[in-house]
Image (cartoon, rainbow, N blue to C red):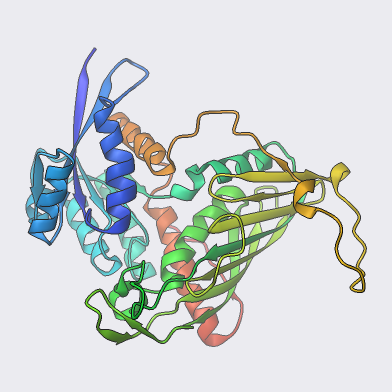
Length: 387
């Protein structure tokens, strides 16, 4: 039995997503478990190298978690011949340059989304990955979460019959930062820094819709800046130049050619009255299901009640009790960790990761066209991307 250790340069690890999901809940658990085993008996272990611009903070995190190597020199880590993988979770506006350098240096890459600020640059990244032959993976975490794993299983099993529609609700109230500290970074609300709900979330919705239903064929979106003034991490007032909500309607096509209507509301200016921060409902001729991050409930055609509209009487039907929970029927790990392990297996095998930079480019395309749709107040067809 042999052990192969992959050295991973983790950039932007002091940020919320990079720290919590990728370091604490993914890479460190893999490391602390002694790695994972491939089918041939080889053990794959990971060795993180923490990278950030704040030396004191990155050093503190390294000491806290027993990580030996850390640096503020991103270029030095990229050009270090002992580094196998470069991971990026930094600001969107900086990401494309980092990924280009990493692939040019022959490094495999795993990255958060969006991969670039423009479609042209996102396509260029996909072309570079193809030319260099590196394994490139893009975080598609929601498809690995228990709720959506169950939802996808229902699709695969034909539970819905002909799928008619999918509806999504995402968001929560992000405090302005004056009285209560904002729970998202201020750059999220500055367009000049790559912020914006559409830019941030439409790349997620593209892979969710692709991964569960099929190809996104058109978009009609309305984007809004509901909260025009916010306060940053230093307590200074600033103007919000990016949208904080996006309301989208999508035309989808299943692999079988059926047309499906998609609707997703995304807002950082909404108060939650649902079971989870994001929920998706699929309705079909034979049944319906609602999935959040972890839970999924379903209702078959034969078990569907027959309510009658009568506004003069109070509602007596227990609608929520008429749905059955969908079991996991498997041990489902943390979604980020599960994709990390799949990506690392692809790196060792020298093969393409199923969620690569071309998929990410389609997400950037949807965000770009969503903003255009809102500006022009019209539906826009989505052309296919080819390299």
